[in-house]
Image (cartoon, rainbow, N blue to C red; front, side, top):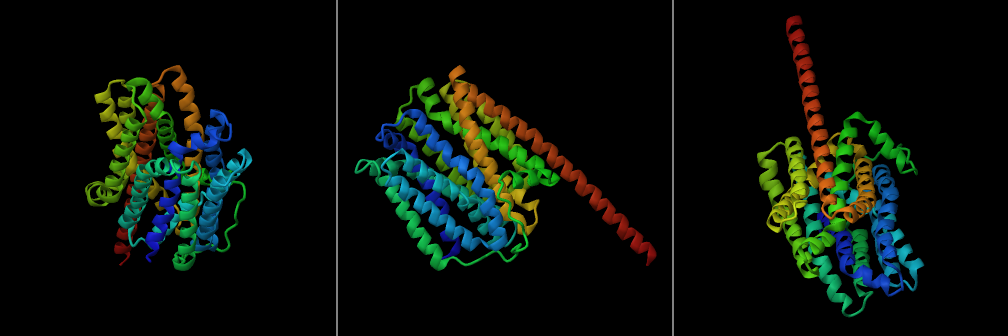
Length: 405
């Protein structure tokens, strides 16, 4: 069994769990007599603990290797879902989500693994695109599986994901080799999750990219959290119609990251320029969505789906290129932490703005995207100027050597 298949299976199970939660979690939690606030809190608690765990596990994978950390993380995911499915009260519901949040290192370590086995820059970016395609598949079929299994038992969808994660743990234990050939064994591991983030922000080559990534995540999280509410309030969409919009987004994501990224985008455009201009397309898409006409909304949602599906891969790839080889796990962990912050604050902000006026969250997301565009454009121009200076200095040195000869 190929190592790439096991890594993609790991990501798929994580995303499948997210997809299954969407239609089932509110009903499952309500069966414990919990309020709507507790439902939203269960979503937030996962992201909160993911923020603390991701950079720590990513750094450990740089130090001791991808395999042991990934196997522990997969086991923790399986355990978290089983505890959640078997919960007899709210305490164990929260415990299950906390355990799964503490295993959120799955994603950045899986990314690190695919970067390790890539032969060149294009394969690295296309491998990251495959993870994005898996996201699309999981978010399309997850809600369908959750709905079907819940007809049998309200807890059965969570048993299903826990069982899949357990199988994945066994497969990884048996088949997954180590790929990190540049272990940083002397690396000091920081327990404080803010220290890797602060350290990354002190790195001038990473600082602007991290800020743009945070704005990107904030915009996407804002959109996801209130999309169903917006469609229902503005266009009277029911749950089936909202599911159709989610399916369309997932299909675009799969096509873009599973095929078009490698065959079209990276062939026709430089990665850095592609990242800059697709961020502008993303911002425009959000502004268009905020115009409350169905046809115009449809154009906006397509723009956003196309832009975000490519940007997830190119932004990540650009950031990992700026660090040392033995720091990839740490960088990806920091990116995952920043994404977790977006997943915590984005929905809270979107809910507040939605209460004022229903299209304000999309206008805010458009502003975030526009800010990210200007940051990335400035960063891109700065890198070009730095490279030009370096090339000129190299040329001068070569000319001096020629004169000496």
